[in-house]
Image (cartoon, rainbow, N blue to C red; front, top):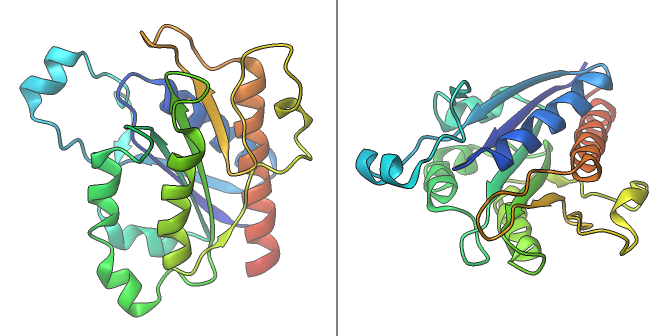
Length: 200
């Protein structure tokens, strides 16, 4: 049985919903999954003023060394101007010791994200997350076209071959759709199945 970590940051809950769906996909495939968020680095007054509530009810990861305990790591972060949030980047900036030891080499990595608009940087944000995982020696799993839900233009929807995604709308009012959540579940299942094959 593979053990998978879903590691995320979420300001308003969109990425948290996607994290839950990724974890569902892992568990539906018969594998173990933990969901953890990275620490909030925004000043408390800033977070309160902005109404950040996206990580309430979830546990914070104990530290970078915890990554080594998993067979696969799925990183979820909203986009900030086409890149990862500073909170997620700050966490990965502390993983130098893991890199020095090669502690994540051979593990499976994947990513998911949320943007305000359809062209708001989903793919660049996913690639930013994947770049960290590649430097760590992870084998990358994307949202392959076995997930047919990402095809078609009949509705507004996320989903890229680089990872699962959702579109929140400029005011954050749009919630992840059934198709987007299904994409996240598919990604979780693929990560778990791949990790099980590599570490079985």
